[in-house]
Image (cartoon, rainbow, N blue to C red):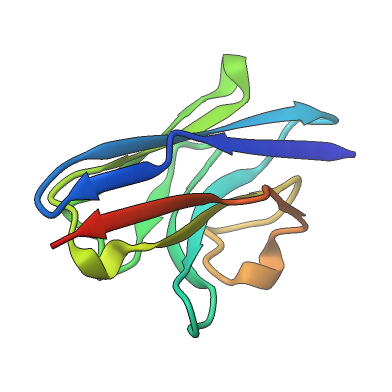
Length: 124
């Protein structure tokens, strides 16, 4: 089994920055992809960013150029650096992981493992 624990969420003003982290534990051998999704109140969970073991990354258009995903494989940890935050970035951010796959998965059902979520609130 794999456990994912997010940290680093909080309240920030528009234009500010925040970094959230996700540490994986348990059976994390060869975790193919680790990524981030978010869910705002009343909305569907949406893809934000992901990275694979080959260091391939992709981002949602809404965060491209503002967010950066990175991964420390030795620590089984993935990070999301969020800059130039906007009020519409307010959501619960979920870490997700997949032990296998191909390409750069952006579909939420490609990820069997999920964290409990961390709240990010951007005030205007």
